Image (cartoon, rainbow, N blue to C red):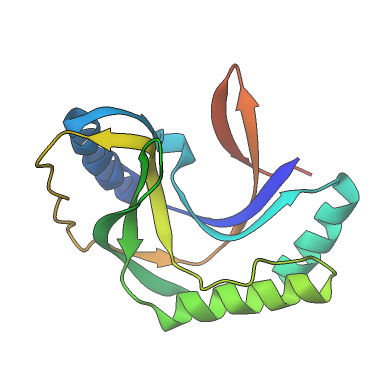
Amino acid sequence: MRLFIAVNFPDEVKSTIVEINNSLKDAALYGNFSSIDNLHLTLVFLGECDVLQTEAIKEAMDNTTFPEFSLALDKAGYFKRDGGNIYWIGLKESNSLSRLQADLSENLKQKGFIIENRKFVPHITIGREVKMRDRFVLPEIQQISFKISSIELMVSERVNGRLVYRGWET
């Protein structure tokens, strides 16, 4: 199973992201756009894991405690890629989020997991392999704040050719 640990969003935040996503979709020549059910913020990508490893992951998550904190949508952007760019919505800088991600990564390393050693750039992927029309301008993002009080272990799988993210069920 392909696993990752994520922050999932309240419905009102997902609705706002979908509106932005739809405006991008309308301005695109082509691309694969995220469904409302797949919107999340990845904290740590774990890759292929077996059932035994999930116990260690859950322990690392349980050892990662944090107080509730606020996040806010901040801006839109993209990562340049051959064959189409990856479009995302960024989050306003948050020391609480950075600390959560670092603590979680450290707890996973202590359980024997190899975690990517690159700067954490919090973003919500909304489109992959996207080619925009000429003169496209990134939309302004309304800074909507929301509370974070939990993280979830997620499974990434293909169902009928479609990418689906779902919560891990024991």
